[in-house]
Image (cartoon, rainbow over all chains, first blue to last red; front, top):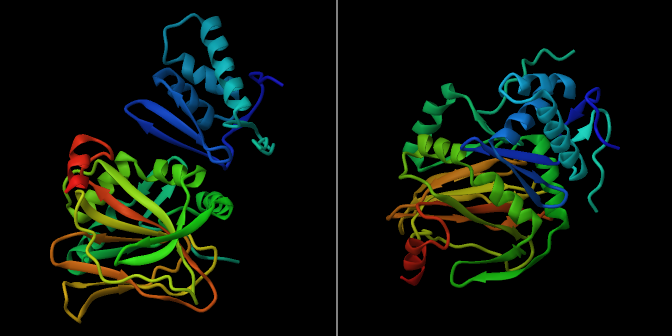
Length: 100
Length: 219
């Protein structure tokens, strides 16, 4: 099920990240799969990681970009859903889905 | 009721990168200057260590002989080795290592996971690791349980007096040691019933595979 802005998202224990020159690499320790984020994706990732709800995270990202609200909301939720599908995010209080 | 304040390690490798306390750096540097090696307790944070232990348990090992130096079990390349490479090839970790050791710029960490089992012919002998722009060695303890023996020793070339003897038996602890002309090191035999598993390698001044590395390998 896709994320909504009311959801709370957390980073599973089995996910590590490294920032380099404004970009981020995420690594799922369950699968060994890497996932790269550009500068915008990195801002979204940090906001999700540092805020209680996706709505709060989106508000934080929105303040950093002069972009149409609908566009940034769509991009934000698409990224969150992609990270969820790859086991790089989970709904708060839920176990990460097993990748195997 | 616990009244411990929660004092943490001087350095730790976390899921989001390295963290260290600047106020501990001088003491680590002084120790490294004096004995050419230093121990970093709790190098890997417990949460990350639990994940790594699972990967180590799932990995495959096979016998490997470093001709004239050592024999051991070597972990096959896979998820675990990839994760470890990812974790330690971090510019901020390189910055910390340089701060402690004053080595030249670091371009990469090149390592392997080995296991030495008691009661076998697994062994190590005095060697210097010189070459291929190796500057600083590091060994991280990934053993599932506390083992006996397997102590890191350092000395000046072909002398009897040890510069240092460090037991690296704490889970997730690490040892840094200098690679330099005139210094050599070894790891003593593992005793008892528990094998030693470690992620060990070198901080080097080149990226693996680049021309300077191929030239060094050819030499």
